[in-house]
Image (cartoon, rainbow, N blue to C red; front, side, top):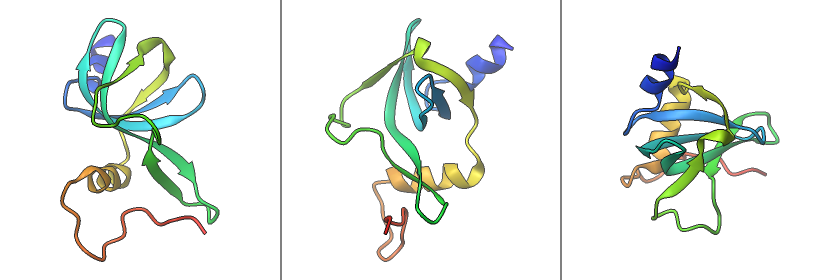
Length: 108
């Protein structure tokens, strides 16, 4: 079981983490230490008024161009993202955007 978890937590991998706060984030793993994960582009999930799931950057005021650290003790679950969630996340973090294509639909 531990081997499977370590396969999920590989540098460069994209995972969904449920935190002890109940929040779920999708993120790319930049690095691992014994006590922390170093994250790139963590995004938080939220439910829109129409019931659909949206994603948004996990920090509004933090510098997302710098390393972000998450204490491993804060993690309750580690999961593979669903394919459609992974595609949406990859589009959201991509530097190349196709004009007119909506990635995240704003809430009304």
